[in-house]
Length: 291
Image (cartoon, rainbow, N blue to C red):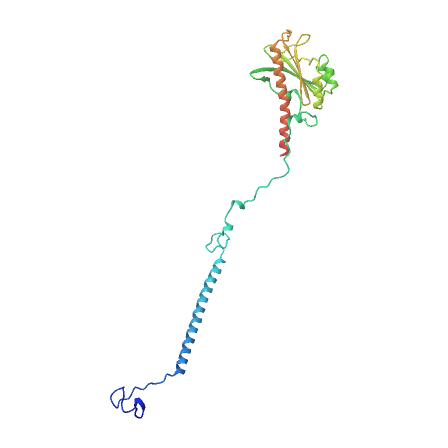
């Protein structure tokens, strides 16, 4: 098969149409222009990407800056919270209060009444029948003994009978105070001998020999002279005290006599409490002076 001049798409016609028609002209693409356009589009996308990233970065930076500035605001209580509330570490707490401190040095022990009345150096309160026996009566339970008379002397032997005077002098008696109390025909005289220290008073008590001299007056006649009477001896601190009890009628006291025995014990107990009260008053004064 042979084709005419011009080949298959020559003037004689061919598959494109009736004779004389021309096949459509096909133009060659401008590859350089296309390449330039593609490059231009790539540059625009790159610029947009860079611009968008810059905007995003700026937005993030602005947010961070706002957060930093906000975090720098002081709360109304001096904290760092942006909403004005104190930060947790600044909230009031009981643990923030100072802990109490305690001294390692123990406070001095309060003075003891017995210690005071055991030594003339500390037992300095005024001492007389009025201070030692201030009450109008001596009380014990429901029994009351009216005070009749009192006396005091620094010559202890003159207020004693029998061998007691020698005992008092030999042990250094400084003063002897006496008081007489009575109840229902029974009278009791108590004598309080004062020494420099406890040891001398204890020794005088242990060496006791009858008797303390009874003291009359104040409605009580002479009693317990040349007749049998009850007697006792005891001591507390630097004081030794002795009692003699009997009937104001002069009747002799027997060993089984309950009335005179009870009276002597009651007045002796009252005297003990009065001497101890003297020590307590001075101990309280010493404690108050050291506060």
